Structures are given as structure tokens and as C-alpha cells.
Image (tube, rainbow over all chains, first blue to last red; front, side):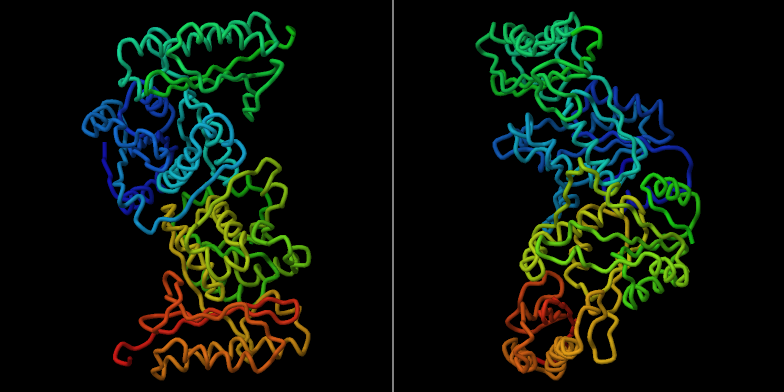
Length: 286
Length: 286
């Protein structure tokens, strides 16, 4: 496995790749790699000749009041995990080279970023789309692997790829979960034992909603009530949003139809958690 | 010469190019090709194995009150000129495919776009950087050829390439001029005979300023006065801006030093004209 820290070296590595056949698969990360990232890397490894992972904690996607400063960093462990997973290239640029002082470009996906995470974190997606564009320019992958856990992010990046005409396939990979259903996340490590139990309620509520839809409930308010019941059971779980949406444009629905996504964000103590489930509802029921 | 009108066909053309050696040179245009464009194409032809020209009148870079509707279009003539100039690929996408109804991404260079053209045309550069990013994603050139005539645009695209980490060299090509010094432009054809004479005053003023600097004048106000004298001689030439700036960041200077650019924009009748001259002043004089 090769490790590259500079843009110039990445450029020359990428130029050499042009002469080789076979696709480049790319997994962008902020490091602190966990089972969720590893599952993306394994998928890339299975499907691509060359696998590139980037590790870069992107300050642009953190709000001012957010946890940039204490976001977990452990490059030696990340490097070891990547090597063990058969990664070909680990790209870990320095903050100074990636965003030099005269850096002044932003890439914005406008409509899809307004709701949900975009409302809670107004500058977040602009930070994501800017860093992803830079990384795509550098790595020029044929396939990029993103987790379903950040479903809105997945859709935003899909829109970005489509709008900017990247010749690149975006692969959505299933959310990896703990024994009780909690979605794996770098931020889970900050949960106390009590909070850890509470955090499990989000995925439980989502499953409750998904089950209701699968068994034929089509009224969104009814589904919503069943999910609220679970989350309201613990006053220390603060719901930021919990919504049943069109799976393509994330507009909230009043009646369940087609493929929907149930999106949720809660706060437990100081920790903000998000999760979602995609539910395809059979046409015959209604 | 091959002509491609669709994004999908361009993607597959570009994928095949990966297997060939040698650089791809790219000249993006809005069509209505004139001697200025041809000089860019000739330079690309000399320096690159494969030359791609795009013809696309980009609505995003026109303001609401601007001349999008009457911007000159003549695809058969453009195609003939490209073929004669030895272009390998002419890319002319349709408006509908390039900006489909759900298009929602913008690319913005923030600081460099505030002054001068950005002040006169507030949405212009965002339109330019968005279309240029899309075209770079599609063509993935090794070298892109831009004219010095749009000097601020050249700097903005340079910043864009740097900020987004494109592995791409931007080549600035000298302004092509008419017999009397008027910079060649698609909009010159709209000038009446009288206006045509007046339009020549802009380049005359710039040369006057440049000559003053070359002969040792270092006070910007003195240089400015000599230029104003020429433009004030005709009350039907309306100066929008005329400034002596740092050639890298376009900040206006009070004292001439290093390499400066004299930027000018005037209106003659309904036609807006821009031009500029780069002047390197010798260190010894001061």
C-alpha cells in the first residue's frame, strides 16, 4: 500500500494509472475508521482493480459550534486498517496544502441541501460537496463508495455527480449496525453507557415505522405516531427530525407510496445521531 | 473531426482517450468563432496530440438584462472553422441535456470575482466557473487555452483549477486585435461604423497608460489621467471602470510596481467592451 500526503504526488500517481486498465474505486473518509468504513472498502476491493481511500478531517463541513476540535483522529490505526483491507493507495493530505490561505472556491448543491441535515447544519453540505469535488478531481475514480447511513449526503453527492457530469458511478452501501441496531458511527464512542442505551431507540423507532409500512399502513401520521411512541418513552432523547420522505427528492410525504426513506436525527446528551431506513412498499396494498 | 452532442457519447470518447498517450488540449467557446478563438485553437493544435473545442452558449453567465437572446450563433460556420483548423473533437451539447430541469449545482470562486466584471455583472463569474467545471469534468483536458482578453476570467479559472486540484495547465494566449488595436470579440459585429471608431479608443487609452508606465511614470493617478484624456475626448464612450491593478489579485494600486494589469470596460451605444494590457515595469525605474 502506498501512502501519499501531497497533491503533486497524487497527480503523478493518477497520471500513471491512466495507462493501466480497470476501474479505480474510491472511499473518502474522515479517518477514525470503523466497521462502516471497512465495509465500504471491502466492497470497493471486490469490484475495482485499484482501491483508493482518503483520510481527511474536512473543517468546511463542521459548523462553528460543532465538534471539529474533538473529532477523533488516529492516523497510524487508519493506516494499519487500510493496509490490512488491501487498499492500494491511502491519500491523507495536510490541511495547509488542501486549503491554502488563498483558497476561495465553494461547490453548492442548492435544493436537495435545504431540508433535514441542511436545516440543522446550514454550512455542512457545502463543505461536503466542496471537499468531494476536490477529491474527485484528484483521484478521478470510476466508482465511489458511500454509506447509506448518511442518506441525504448520498443523494447530494449523486446530484453533484450528475450536475457536474462526472463520469463516475456512485455506489450506495448498506448501513453497518451494532448488535442492537445502532448505526455504526465515529461519534458513538463518545456515548456514556446510559446514553448508549438511549441511542439505540432511534434505530428501534425507524424499524417500528418500517414494519408499520410493510404491514400496510399508508397514512404517514399513523406511522409517525408509532415511531414517536418509542422515542417519547425516554425524555432524554431529543428528536431533531423524524420524517417519511420521497426517497429521491426527500420531500416529506403525507401518504406512503413507492419507495420512501424514513429519516431521523436525535440528540442524546451532547451527541447528535442520524439514521435512516429505505422502505419499498408493495403496490397492491394501499 | 468528430462532432459529439451528448454527454454520454463524450464520456465514452474520453474513456477511450485514456488508453492513448499525449495531452488533450481544450478550447471552450460560446461559438461564433472569430480570429481570437482560432488563435487559441492553433496554439492547442501546436502543443497537444488531441484538440477538443466546445461550443455552448452558456445562459448561466448572462445577466437578466444581458444579450443572451441575441448572442450570435452559427454552428455550421463554427464546425467548418474547427474542421479547417484541425480540431479532433467538437463538443456541442444541447441546453436541455447540459442543464436539465433538476440541475441545482453552482461552483463559485469567491474573492477574485467581487471586483470589476463581477461588480458590473454579479452572476457572471458563477456562471463561468460552473460551466467550466462541467466542461473540465467531461473533457478532462491536460491543457486548457484561454484568451488574455478576458483577463479576470483567466485569473478566476486559474484559481478554480488550483482550488479544486485539477491536474491541468491553463495557458493564457495573447489578445488578438484588429488593425486599429480593438480587441477581437463576438460583440464587435454589433457596432455601427461610428461606434466602431469610438470602440477603438479603449485600446488606445490602455496603450497610452502602458506607454506612460514603460517610460517611468509610477504614480497611478498620473497614468490614469493620461488614459482619461483619451476616453474623455468622446462623450459617447461611457467608462465603466479603468484601473491599474496587481496582476495576480486584481487589487487596485496607488503606485505602479512589479507586473500590473490595466483593466478597462466601456460602453459604446448598447455594446459593452472590455480590454486589458499587462505591463511589467523594470525595477530600476521608480
